Each structure stands twice: as C-alpha cells, then as structure tokens.
Length: 458
Image (cartoon, rainbow, N blue to C red; front, side, top):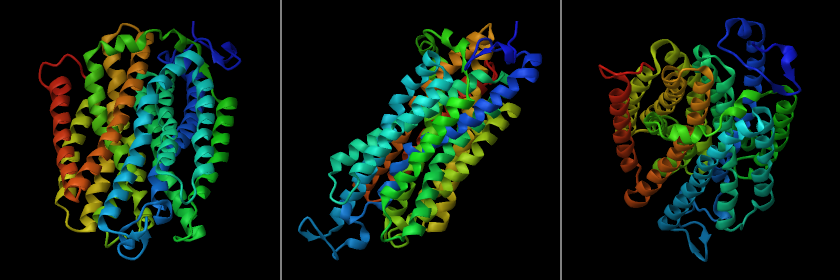
C-alpha cells in the first residue's frame, strides 16, 4: 500500500514510497518539493552562520587586537609600534579563528544526522534553526573593541552548530526522493545551502557600503541574521513533514562504518567539500596576506571574497545533474584532474588576475565535485542492497558521516595555510599539499569505481 495525502497524520507521513511512479506523481513529488524548498532555505541560513567568522575577521582590525600591514610602524600595539611579526601573528590568529567553527561543524554533523531519524526531519529542522541563535546572540553581546582572544575563540566555536544543518538536511532530503532524482535533489539542496557562504559575504559588503569601510560595525552583520533564523524556523514548523519510516534507521551508522565504501567516499568528500568550505573560510585572509599591496586592509578583500563561494555553490547542482547523466565516478575523477591543474595555476601565479582565475576555478570544480560525490553514495547502496528502505537507511547514514569527515577537510585547509604562511611567508607549501591530495583522490576514484573489472557502476 502506498501513502496518499489522507495518510499524512499531523506532520508525520506514515508511508513513503517514492520509487512507485504512481505514488510519486500523485502525491510524493508535491510533498518532496515543498520539503526541499524549505530545507534549502534553512540550510542556507545555517551555512551563513557557520561561515560567519570568515567575514567577521575582516572587520577585526587593530582595535580588536589584530594589526594589519597598513599599521606597520604607524600605530601602537601593546605599547610598541606595530611590527611585521605582530602582523604575522595576527594573521595566524585569524586563521585559527576561522578553523574553529570548521572543526566544531564537522563534529556536530554526526549527531545531527542521527537526530533526523530520532525526532523527524521537520522537527529537527526547527530545532537546529533555533540553535543558530546561540552563536548569534552570544557573539553580539561580547564582540566589542578590547575583547579577549579566548572569548572570540569560544564564540567562533559556537558558530560551528551551523555546519551540522547540512548533514541533517541532506539525510532528510535523501529519504524524500527516488533514486533517479537524488542527484538533482541533493545537488539543489546542497548548492542552495552552500550559497550561504557567499551570501554572508554579500551581506557584509552591504554593511560596509551602508556604514563605511572604516566605521563598519561587525555586530550589525550579526543582528541582520537573527530575524532570518526565526523566519527559517517558522517556515520549517508550518511547511515541512516528518517521515515515519526514518525511525526504523536503527544501527545504520554502525553498519555503514563496516563498509569499506564508507571510507572511500569520505576521503573523496574531503577533497571536494573540504576544499570548498576551507577555501570559503580562508579566501579573504589568503588574499590580504599574499597580496598586501592590492589589499592594504582586510575589508578591501571583501569585495572579491564572495565570488568563489558564489560560483561554487551555484555550480553544485550541475555536478549532480552531470552525475545523473554520465555517472558520479566519472565526473568526480575528471573534477580531481582539473582541481589539481587549477591548484597548479594558483601555485605558479605571479599576478592577482591569474591568481583569482585559478582560485575561482578551484571553487567551481569543488562545487561540481560536491554534487557528483553525493550522487555516488545512494547509487552505491542501490546496487548492493535488496530493498529501497535498506538503501535509504545506509545511504542516509553515510551522507551524514561523509559530510562530517568532509567538513573536517575545511580545518585541514586552514591549518595548511596557517602553517605555510608562518614558516615560509607564502601559501606555496599549502598548494603543493593540495595538488598531491587531489591526485591521490583521482587514483582512489579510478581504482575503486572506474578500473576495468569493477563490480559497481556509480
């Protein structure tokens, strides 16, 4: 028996069979689309809060204890004129600030994945949206000139809860759609969410334009997002549904951890999503440190930092669509080849224009790879399990786990940049590491999913 609208009790859909064409056309498509739209909006806000500190650090100048190149020899800092060492230390501290929310966000993705099956996708979307108020209100209260660096670290860590929204949202939407449409649906959901990285940077630009570059108040940016969070929670409460069948996903994480494909896909997702979120957090800082003459103050870089995350987010659904048509593994492998090439362009760039072209290409390709790798996950279990319910149970768990591990790649990206700048004064060491990693991902994709004699076609 398949569900009809009359079998939706309250906010719980008791039976869900999207692989049945009759059910999908008569009932399922409408419900799934409504949940997808609200999910995208809520996840978008979550991504904005998660990446908030990548923008806030651009506002933090010498009044907050972070001297920049323009202050060298011209301003007092702890009783002495600012030196190059002070600027290098401030840059390293900013990389640390943007690494903390990336790390916390990767950790909370696992419990967020479990929460969908435990309390329902609609219910958890409401709860996770309201949790975003914690970092917003806390940071608004303490972010003033003279605030201690340790306090900033705590506030940055709280923003990590925004990273968890992606895992729960993707797990939830994965259950709503039939296998043939998962690439498109997951690509749209993730791409709309990823746009939050670019959106918060555009909102920051609006604040700068409104208040002036030298007087822009970072707390204004925070205040703008409070009503948006409340709006997302309200929309989820009234417009989303819970799938009762997801409550049966017991021990899914334990089972999926025993599967070797889990660790292969998680590794690949570090290369795609880890690159996207890591570059999204670090781009502004990299520009101001590596091209001091072009960006004398961090706020000068804000006019360019949104570009990469914006394009990378918009292109992510294309990765899912290409994977639906050409196969996820083939698209993913091609992406890693091109990412290694783009990183080489950035490594060898001697002008800002070439550097920007290479970096934007990295964002674009990581966005395509995000979509294609997530398409591979349900395709793997669709071929290796006997029922749709079992495939949904395991793919939902893997989406959450791969999302958590992939997000930790964002931490590694920022650590690589931090150490490279501290020890060599440039990002060259970091780019060499990225190139090597992308080539390793390429070899792994080919060996497991593309070589002759393989058992899976994904």
